[in-house]
Image (cartoon, rainbow, N blue to C red; front, side, top):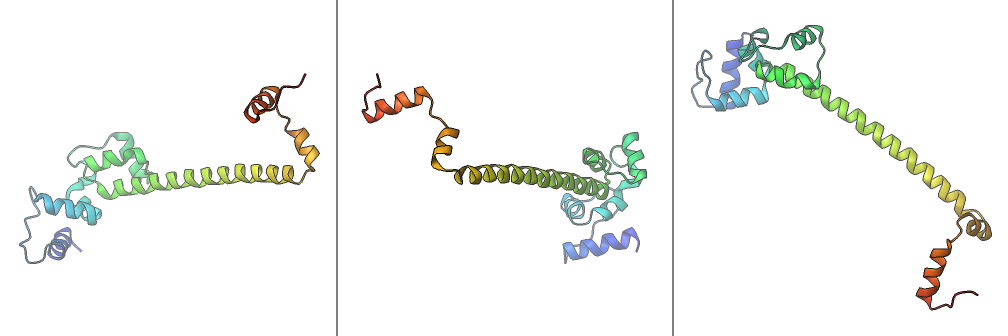
Length: 155
């Protein structure tokens, strides 16, 4: 399908009953926003011009694009060059990285929780004397408790 046909089809569906503006030149803002949001590949076909859109791609970004490598930090370069589909790939890669970090954080927190839970369970299974011995009360804490409870200090 040609870019022109895809453009006319998109505009007819997105804005039924309205005349389709010319594809050449400046496209009205509402059409641009709708296309860039809903069909970034069409926008890229219309305006991308192989990375020479409104601003050229940096060479390192262009090289990564040719290699199929999408870094989250390159998304803005692609958007500035009207290569929205590539920008969306960078955004997806960034979300994948964030999701992986969240999973790793969750697993680390779960492991720490399980360790504390196992220690607490083991401590709870000890006889009372062993638990008291394992967590002795400091002299300062004992003094404060005696004062709070109105118990006289030992001699």
